[in-house]
Image 1 (cartoon, rainbow, N blue to C red):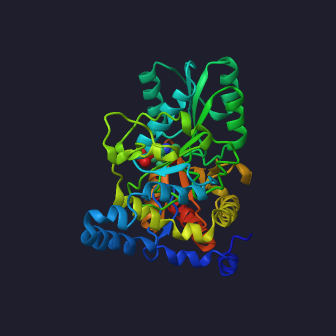
Image 2 (image 1 turned 90 degrees about the horizontal axis):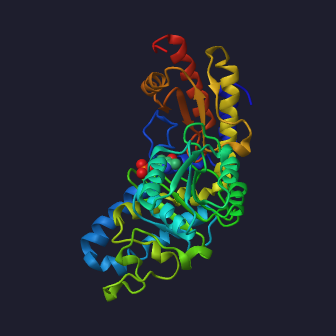
Image 3 (image 1 turned 135 degrees about the vertical axis):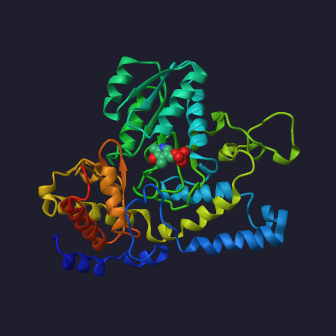
Length: 403
Ligand SMILES: *Cc1c(COP(=O)(O)O)cnc(C)c1O
């Protein structure tokens, strides 16, 4: 790897995923390195949405539920996302916001281990997750224990026999550190607890292997690496072994065993259908379905391989081109411990990110001083990484940013 535009161009010319860049409608001259906040618009989406609105809704009206497959969409799209996270069919459903799915999953996890009074929550997790964990603990009268993932062993030992639901982030949304999902899940299961993984920063970015890793429950949003667009519905995965006992608090008639009986009492459907709620957000759901096409065609493994290499290149460029800047990479250098983005400790990160945006490089900042660069191999090139680092060097050298 060399810090030259020629090296980057040569890599791009040999990149087997290079053609996927054309599958995204990115504005000219924009380098999108904040796809972990909102993924770009896949070319497949606008026509799909147009078809759903004009033909399915406009012409077929209520017939769309059957003739156009709206009724099955939450589980059909769920299976497609399931394949991307290593889940066999019939274990993933799509619908609702991330908050609702988290509430659903964490409460259901607590109900899977009655009598256990401690709810453990990842202290470095995304705010929504931490708020929801606290809310569920309050609602169910559980003791909330927050811990960083590397302190989990101590918490399980201190609360031996008491820990029930354990809500963890797979990839740290700040540092980009990836947790060993299989090992941690086994650790929690060994202590009698039930894991709920938030895969928002993992789905579509890293090969999760949900089934093989023995994951109990998982949740993730649809608009980051899955590119489902703003407000895309979230997904919920529940391992088949839990289905019979899975008691989800957010119920709706689509999750009923006999939805069209309009019965007085809720009887959950068999299998993952019980995780459906009421009428789903069909337009957003079908936009998300269309958005999965390029990722499915490329394959998560290939995207991951390239993303790691882009990250390696970025880390090397920071060490060479930006060596005088005082920036530090906070993301683990071990590829097995790295998620889809690389975070730099950069004083004045919000101002630096704003100055980069003026130069066409989209990044984001997270308090207190982290600059995040998302390296999605589906649409980011080696030349993009080289240009982004050059822009960063210029921004820092110009003194246009007060740090
Ligand atoms: C992005 C993200 C969310 C987003 O929650 P919304 O309700 O969709 O805003 C939740 N959890 C994690 C870990 C995330 O990375």
